[in-house]
Length: 428
Image (tube, rainbow, N blue to C red; front, side, top):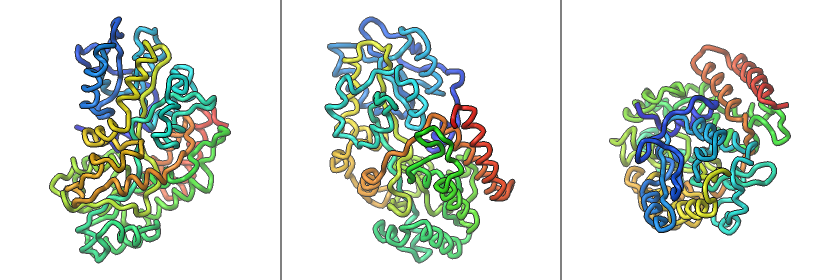
């Protein structure tokens, strides 16, 4: 069974390093680089295959670029390589956005990109994206592959039948706050029995957390999971359940989510630009019914990854040149067309590749929504333990949603378990 990007992110947020799985590359080995090879590790969908193929040709006179596709737990495989002998370390390695924070305490394992040329092109990319890959000692370990600007996807046909606005600008004006969003959800569920507003409460919780300025651990390494900002996100998500507009689909149940998308009984989705690909894939027959608006969900980032240069990799100067070319604004625009990777370079938002009307979304030019959201997004400090702590809150919120606990019990347990886990990971 294939996983959506949302499910992959949800699963990755709770993973700890585990036994690595094998790689799939040209010869099936994923082994150390030969004398004239520059090995690049990435995961399925992590880079544009078309851009990679061109990079292999472009740099062939100087090195044999060898892209290696790593299946399974990418972080575990990279962590294992970084801890092993130099000959097993790739010259270029991807780092997923939800995992970058876990590598920052060991920034010494990566080449500082400030020292190899990143400062010369930094202005071409969103500042907050660079900040995500910057360690406390100012080492820069990641070059932006893509970002995940958020927005609200919605079924225009369902909105129209419920008497709500249909055009994206009008929808945002009507559903500009979470209060407006819930009120619209009540109208939809009353007018259209069987239709629900959103997949589940954890989805909403994640978006609100991403919109904030703090997560569960602050920059002084203090647990703040009991803070007002987390409680506000929790209360907003719990309201989705209380108003009866949530579909209550378990986080891990992609099949049920896709069934609702196909049946046309889910009115909205909240997520990053890449979620559009998941919706299209799950419900191809709904082409023309979906639209995208800022709504209450814009201005946050959810997902988006990096390329890095492991310090023991071969020839960092050449590796950096390859990396910078693959991730140039022009090639990020190509990657959007080829692999639905939303660019971290704002100049691309006016390029033809991103301004093509999208027939699935009713001919809408969706970059107008996502580009604005990207410009409004900001850095949110993420501690190495944040993703694992958030998983506890998501689990407890899901327990409340399915009726296994009261909201009071679920919140109490989330804070207690979150604090315990954080402490076990060295958080004060």
